[in-house]
Picture: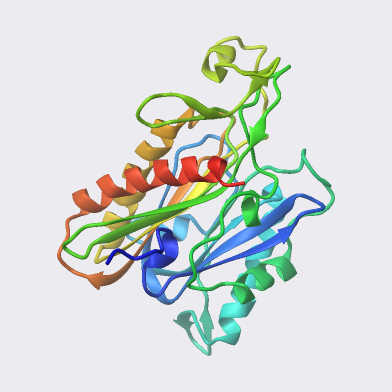
Length: 305
């Protein structure tokens, strides 16, 4: 019988927790993998806000991450990663370094300061709370956690739609599982990956507008208020180089579901995690499914209310 969990937490060893400030319209979302997971990253947007992404590049000493933080608050929100590090250290989780263990917690941010209280941002306390809230239950979606203040479809004179957090999962009969959680705060519209139908985005006079067309006019640009970030995870066994390749391939799903994506005013970033409990798959299979679940998660983010 197929599992009812069709989200990132369908992968054993991974928990997800949200911390939400509905009044200030901001929050953070943590993906915990305390046993450690081989990790990779790919940053495609030109305006990213990140932490410890360089540690995940191929050839680095650190091979695994213990959590990934997705957060609102723009660069200010990176403070929340300190709370995740504190939580994991209290659990004696981390990379052995002399007398201590150092938790490896890469992070990425979205810009949500324009929709709520710009003076309230995710902080160390909120990051810690997200860890305390983390469970293996199906991931809650919509305007929650890092997606609380997320919006999509932006251009001058256009009303944007709500974005949010979305998750999706795919399984093969062989036992391979690939899943994703994505925080959708895009400059572009969210579209159906197969039909191109606009599902959420910029509106004018109550009707969706083509953001791609608007952006061809240099005067129709909304700077620095966007970014879609997320985590793709699998139970497959991958090397760090392969995890980085999966993160790259996963961005195809973003391009299918967000138009346009990866612009100069988005900081689009995807992380990849591999728990290594399944040994019978290729990086090609994982990457292909990664793109599929990213696209599905983006759609779920704007459809869940």
